[in-house]
Image (tube, rainbow, N blue to C red):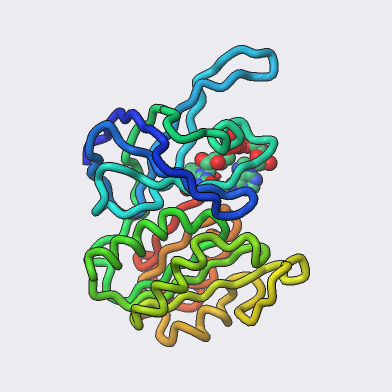
Amino acid sequence: MAVQDLNLEVIEVFNETHDVKTLRFKLDKPLDFQAGQFVMLYMDIPDQHGKVENIKRAYSIASSPAKKDWIDINFRVYSFGRFTPPLFNLKLGDKIKAKGPFGMFVHKEEDGKNVVFLSAGTGIAPIRGMIKLIEEKNLDRNTVLFSSCKTTEDLIFHEEFLRLAGKNKNFRYVPTITRINESKKEWNGEKGRISIELIKKYVKDLKNNFFYICGPPEMVENSREILIFEGVSKENIKFERFH
Ligand SMILES: Cc1cc2nc3c(=O)[nH]c(=O)nc-3n(C[C@H](O)[C@H](O)[C@H](O)COP(=O)(O)OP(=O)(O)OC[C@H]3O[C@@H](n4cnc5c(N)ncnc54)[C@H](O)[C@@H]3O)c2cc1C
């Protein structure tokens, strides 16, 4: 799929948590991409001396490739970050430039029927694109999604995944909360990081599954090592590190 220069316009803003947003961008031309790929976003941002620089950052496409006229970008704002504070402040009608699609973290037909997603925080973004694709195209998949977030207030796309799990018996949603003591809402679900014990509780035959992992580098490396130690072949693990 050829890389294109794109002009994006904000057409919807979804406030997911206190520091996570999804921006829906209208594209100036239809974009062919694979579920899980990312785009490079560009913005002119002044430094502390007021000198404007054109800054770029990578963001996964959090929507399905079946939708070609717009894309969703889901991201966390870092108060000391260079790019995310101005990105967080974009309003309806604001325009920015982008380039894409890029990346090999994609869901393919030949990856098989049994699919396990491991996500930490905003690592959910490309995985949501893959899950949307599976749902919209009605692909024959047995899917388990493990999504770890710090507190019950940090869960991303939680209601959406609960609804999907309610109507699709082939989709299992396992959110897990790593800092339960800091959470405000009552929580009867899983707690702690995504461990091998947790994965085995919901996935009976690890070697018969294809794994997609996305999140901070440490989480991705740890998860990969654990799975390989348990006998999952490297070829059956795709991953994307955010940093
Ligand atoms: C292929 C790829 C896809 C990506 N997709 C997404 C996505 O879909 N959603 C998304 O939110 N991000 C994504 N990222 C990360 C994104 O590109 C930026 O790095 C991130 O948004 C921070 O940008 P920033 O300019 O605000 O921070 P920077 O100015 O680059 O960093 C400033 C400080 O912010 C803090 N910080 C920045 N990033 C992180 C982090 N990930 N974890 C902890 N602390 C951090 C650190 O303290 C850092 O020193 C992706 C990265 C890659 C490589």
